[in-house]
Image 1: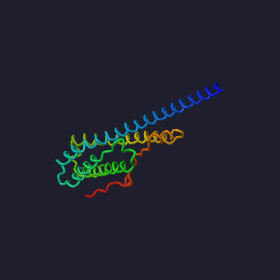
Image 2: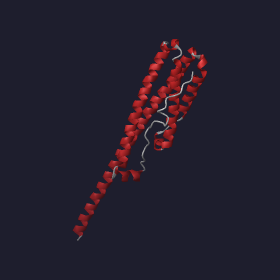
Image 3: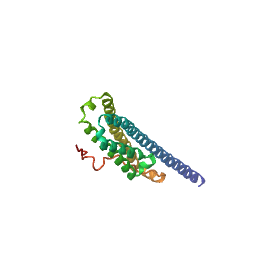
Image 4: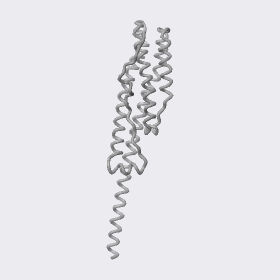
Amino acid sequence: MARGFLIALVVLAVLVVGVVGWAVSVNNQLVRLDQDVNEKWAQVQNVYQRRADLIPNLVETVKGFAAQERTVLEEVTRARASATSVQLTPQALNDPKALERFQAAQSQLSGALSRLLVTVERYPELKSNQNFLALQTQLEGTENRIAVERRRFNEAVRGYNTRLKLFPGSVVAGMTGFRPKAFFEATADAATPPKVKF
């Protein structure tokens, strides 16, 4: 009888150790995926900051050639201030509304920049200015980087959210407090081109 009890106790201990080991493994996978999402988000913010850093130089260059375009220049400056004031921490990535606010501010800045670049078409001497051309090239490259980093972020979110929802890992995720993260999505007005008035 004592021998049977001892065997049952050993089997139970092995099962408990196995379940705990499995839960720790799943938790560690979720932590790695969560950190990957956070790292990708930091890179998204990095390229948005690069764009924000280029804008004052672009505005100053345009100002020298197109002083009468003050409204467009002020709009770009306001949009930049708005975009840089909305910060999204990795912890806030679990809040879809916070991500929407961030996206809206960045979209507003993108629209203002588009209007500025269209306005510049009226100034051939500006379009041939080396400083302006260099800034415009850097800005175009930065916009491409933004698109790449947003895609990478969304891929990381997809991997994290998938692992979070797979059974039986979802049980561990629920017990340890991991929550789904929102994707970076286009704003509702993204398909509408910006309106430019001359």
